Image (cartoon, rainbow, N blue to C red):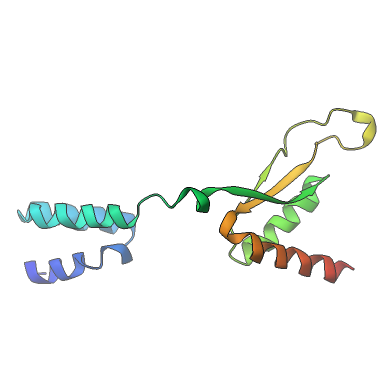
Length: 129
Protein backbone atom coordinates (compact mmCIF):
# COMPACT_ATOMS: atom_id res chain seq x y z
CA UNK A 1 0.00 0.00 0.00
CA UNK A 2 1.29 3.45 -0.77
CA UNK A 3 0.98 6.36 1.68
CA UNK A 4 -2.21 7.66 0.05
CA UNK A 5 -3.97 4.30 0.33
CA UNK A 6 -2.83 3.95 3.92
CA UNK A 7 -4.16 7.41 4.79
CA UNK A 8 -7.47 6.62 3.07
CA UNK A 9 -7.76 3.48 5.19
CA UNK A 10 -6.87 5.51 8.27
CA UNK A 11 -9.90 7.74 7.65
CA UNK A 12 -12.02 4.63 8.32
CA UNK A 13 -10.26 3.91 11.61
CA UNK A 14 -13.50 3.27 13.49
CA UNK A 15 -14.40 0.38 11.18
CA UNK A 16 -11.26 -1.56 12.11
CA UNK A 17 -10.69 -3.92 15.02
CA UNK A 18 -8.56 -2.66 17.89
CA UNK A 19 -5.64 -4.78 16.68
CA UNK A 20 -5.94 -3.43 13.11
CA UNK A 21 -6.14 0.14 14.43
CA UNK A 22 -2.94 -0.37 16.41
CA UNK A 23 -1.18 -1.87 13.38
CA UNK A 24 -2.33 0.95 11.11
CA UNK A 25 -1.27 3.70 13.52
CA UNK A 26 2.07 1.93 13.98
CA UNK A 27 2.59 1.80 10.22
CA UNK A 28 1.77 5.51 9.93
CA UNK A 29 4.48 6.20 12.51
CA UNK A 30 6.92 3.86 10.70
CA UNK A 31 6.38 5.88 7.53
CA UNK A 32 7.00 9.11 9.44
CA UNK A 33 3.39 10.21 9.08
CA UNK A 34 3.33 10.97 12.80
CA UNK A 35 1.24 14.13 12.58
CA UNK A 36 -1.45 12.34 10.61
CA UNK A 37 -1.41 9.37 12.98
CA UNK A 38 -1.68 11.67 16.01
CA UNK A 39 -4.58 13.61 14.43
CA UNK A 40 -6.48 10.42 13.62
CA UNK A 41 -5.90 9.03 17.07
CA UNK A 42 -7.16 12.25 18.71
CA UNK A 43 -10.26 12.27 16.52
CA UNK A 44 -10.89 8.60 17.20
CA UNK A 45 -10.56 9.08 20.96
CA UNK A 46 -12.88 12.08 20.96
CA UNK A 47 -15.53 10.09 19.07
CA UNK A 48 -15.21 7.29 21.61
CA UNK A 49 -15.51 9.69 24.53
CA UNK A 50 -17.32 8.46 27.59
CA UNK A 51 -21.08 8.65 27.07
CA UNK A 52 -23.13 10.99 29.18
CA UNK A 53 -23.73 10.05 32.79
CA UNK A 54 -27.39 9.33 31.98
CA UNK A 55 -26.56 6.60 29.47
CA UNK A 56 -24.33 4.85 31.99
CA UNK A 57 -26.89 4.77 34.78
CA UNK A 58 -28.20 1.29 35.52
CA UNK A 59 -31.88 0.85 36.29
CA UNK A 60 -33.38 -2.18 38.01
CA UNK A 61 -36.25 -3.39 35.81
CA UNK A 62 -37.11 -6.61 37.63
CA UNK A 63 -36.23 -8.62 40.72
CA UNK A 64 -36.16 -12.39 41.03
CA UNK A 65 -35.99 -14.80 43.93
CA UNK A 66 -33.93 -17.42 42.13
CA UNK A 67 -30.92 -17.34 39.81
CA UNK A 68 -32.59 -19.55 37.18
CA UNK A 69 -35.43 -17.08 36.51
CA UNK A 70 -33.06 -14.11 36.58
CA UNK A 71 -30.68 -15.70 34.10
CA UNK A 72 -33.52 -16.80 31.84
CA UNK A 73 -34.76 -13.20 31.59
CA UNK A 74 -31.19 -11.93 31.21
CA UNK A 75 -30.59 -14.36 28.34
CA UNK A 76 -33.74 -13.23 26.55
CA UNK A 77 -32.77 -9.55 26.87
CA UNK A 78 -29.28 -10.26 25.60
CA UNK A 79 -30.69 -12.21 22.64
CA UNK A 80 -32.63 -9.04 21.78
CA UNK A 81 -29.39 -7.03 21.85
CA UNK A 82 -30.01 -5.41 25.22
CA UNK A 83 -26.99 -5.35 27.50
CA UNK A 84 -28.03 -6.25 31.03
CA UNK A 85 -26.59 -7.15 34.39
CA UNK A 86 -27.65 -9.06 37.47
CA UNK A 87 -26.95 -7.59 40.88
CA UNK A 88 -27.18 -9.11 44.35
CA UNK A 89 -27.10 -12.63 42.93
CA UNK A 90 -24.46 -13.89 45.31
CA UNK A 91 -25.64 -12.11 48.43
CA UNK A 92 -27.23 -14.52 50.88
CA UNK A 93 -30.70 -13.71 52.12
CA UNK A 94 -31.31 -12.56 55.66
CA UNK A 95 -33.33 -15.58 56.62
CA UNK A 96 -32.91 -19.16 55.50
CA UNK A 97 -36.47 -19.83 56.59
CA UNK A 98 -38.10 -17.53 54.02
CA UNK A 99 -37.00 -19.72 51.08
CA UNK A 100 -35.11 -16.81 49.59
CA UNK A 101 -31.55 -17.98 50.19
CA UNK A 102 -30.03 -15.76 47.50
CA UNK A 103 -31.74 -12.51 48.39
CA UNK A 104 -33.46 -10.58 45.64
CA UNK A 105 -31.63 -10.71 42.31
CA UNK A 106 -31.95 -7.44 40.47
CA UNK A 107 -31.98 -7.38 36.68
CA UNK A 108 -30.53 -4.08 35.48
CA UNK A 109 -30.19 -2.35 32.12
CA UNK A 110 -28.75 0.97 31.02
CA UNK A 111 -31.25 3.78 31.34
CA UNK A 112 -31.78 4.30 27.59
CA UNK A 113 -32.72 0.60 27.24
CA UNK A 114 -35.40 0.51 29.94
CA UNK A 115 -38.42 0.87 27.66
CA UNK A 116 -37.26 -1.84 25.23
CA UNK A 117 -36.31 -4.17 28.07
CA UNK A 118 -39.70 -3.72 29.74
CA UNK A 119 -41.42 -4.71 26.50
CA UNK A 120 -39.31 -7.86 26.20
CA UNK A 121 -40.09 -8.84 29.80
CA UNK A 122 -43.80 -8.22 29.17
CA UNK A 123 -43.62 -10.56 26.17
CA UNK A 124 -42.01 -13.24 28.37
CA UNK A 125 -44.78 -12.88 30.97
CA UNK A 126 -47.49 -13.02 28.30
CA UNK A 127 -46.04 -16.19 26.78
CA UNK A 128 -45.88 -17.86 30.20
CA UNK A 129 -49.25 -16.76 31.03
